[in-house]
Length: 132
Image (cartoon, rainbow, N blue to C red):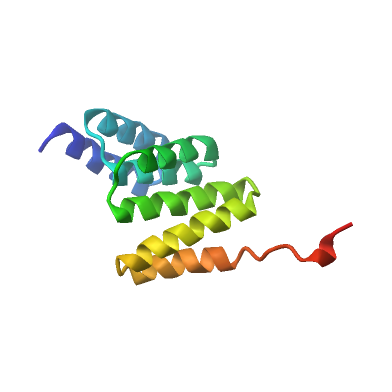
């Protein structure tokens, strides 16, 4: 087994057991050995899990900066939507969720498309009644 694969397996095991710091460290090492967009998305997800949206944003944007397959691109868009939501940037969050939904739908990933659709739908536009 190559080093990157071993590190990814170890990182996944750490993450499943809630050892997020160790998981993050192993994902970083694996990504130094080999660029894997799906692993970078997972690293972004872990950063969100531990409450670090800025590094999560960086990881998702790095995925989009490359030429990832459409599923990784959609997952990065979904992650960016979550980062924007945490930052209370609801319009940006909705736009990312909708892009994720469209990508997932295009490739027949219906469960993922529904998750992104529901996330976008939960962000209702503020009504004019809330204006001071």
